[in-house]
Length: 128
Image (cartoon, rainbow, N blue to C red):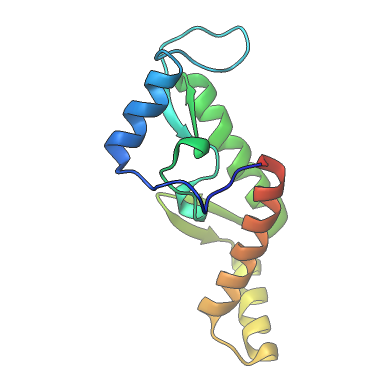
């Protein structure tokens, strides 16, 4: 289980260096020994922190696959994509969010925040 509350958050450069040193600069995926880059298990765009327990060394190929899995799941469940740290939604999803905002008497931003919070909660359970 990832415990985000007890670890000290590091600068991004320090975090990368320590994550890679811990793995001897090699991918931590089974049977892969390629040179690695640092990967956040729980993405920073969804609230992940620069702490060691949230880091894993992955080669570029496995790193891309990890992020692709997150994007596919988000698109399937919520009709949106995360691109360059921004949420991109289709027209139908935007209409549904607008409807919920009117129904719940809250802003579109608040509806989006609640949907992302639900996704984050489910994703955190998977990672832990």
